[in-house]
Length: 154
Image 1: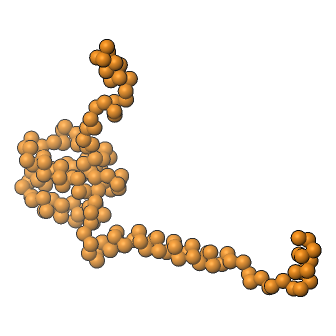
Image 2: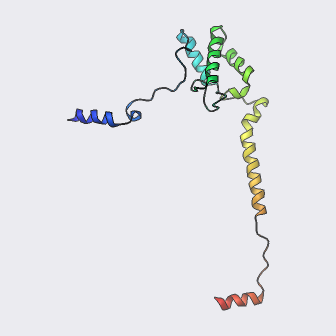
Image 3: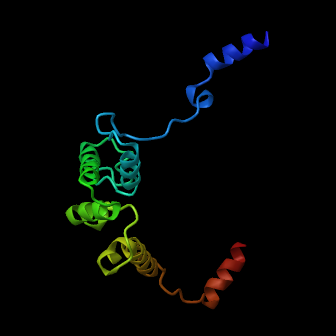
């Protein structure tokens, strides 16, 4: 009876609750290198490169055609005998530091690192200026006649 319940549970339960999650990745079998060591290096490099189409995914996880092209370029560079650093430099030379998921902090990338804080600061300053303009004008104190009228109403 327990086996029957288990079978029914497995059939009725969504696959995400039953099966372990498969590793995410968009690398197609025709892209993979025959040498497992080179393929592992290519995957490590691909995880640090941003898909310039998706922007929040690495090229290892992206299905975009440009990400596929970048994965192929990475593998070509490694097949030519280039080091990991030389391969990264080659990609950065073509696409700039924006292609790195973790760009280095240097003068050329200050905009990438500090830009969001600058936008947040400018937005806060604009909001503060707007709120200051929205303050009501100073109200004169009540006259004796107005105070007396309020007393009669209340």
